Length: 358
Image: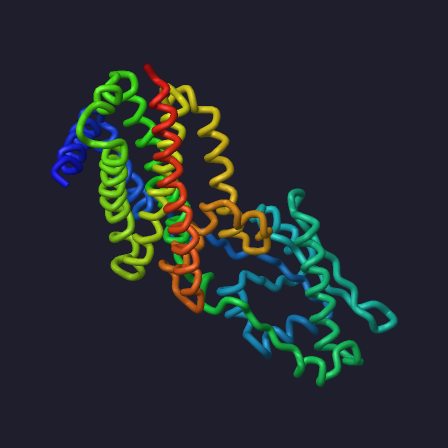
């Protein structure tokens, strides 16, 4: 234990001397400042729609069921008195759309949608279907949607919880913690090993009483200590102690995973700069699961083979609990299993690679 303590102290002094420990803590403070003061809590913007309803059927329905004032205030739907007034509103608000409702001579209704040049086809189709459904519901002959059909419709979410009400700056925390804290082991481990290889201290260490396991263990402990510090700096002011311990567990397991990969790369490449292309490719792969986190519709099975998938969803489940607590322990189990394998494998590979050096 004394040898590990001395090695840990040496690595800490080396990290402070090389500034990466101080830089890591400094970047954590900067990220926290951005999350608290510059990144907004809410980036949602309600779409503005100007409606000219010459038939008054939709306007009267809205007035009776919701209230025009409330719709204009909360939903951004403004009922105007002419086509010219509608176009004038769209010219003043370049993000707005226009909807004109007229009645044909045969009793059917006609809707005309006015869009901005950049309005997507998907949005146009959505509004068309929405208006078709609405007019079928509130006007005769009502036979498009019989009453028993409406009573049988149920919408069930696979994941309960008010996810839309989570502030935007908090929703960014899982990917930020992954990139800022979870992957620090990969870079710092390579930096530590690279420097000791350049200064030839590893060769001297091979004939010292301490073994290679102690040499690597002290560095893993240093990265865990730095990770604990930077994680707490970012997490606690943003989230408090809610979900702190399970989120900390997930991030520490991720750090160990990254540092184990860093050991292997540190043994293969003489300097960190020599591995920059590979590191860039790894970062691209690691970032892919973030797409699934923000867009659950994109969640192919192969994405779960990337360890960062389990980090992101484990952090998300710990920070924003609903009925997804099983994801925390599932993610911890996957990451923990990978850690055990990679810790042993990385130490063995590193020993073999370093043993070949003169």
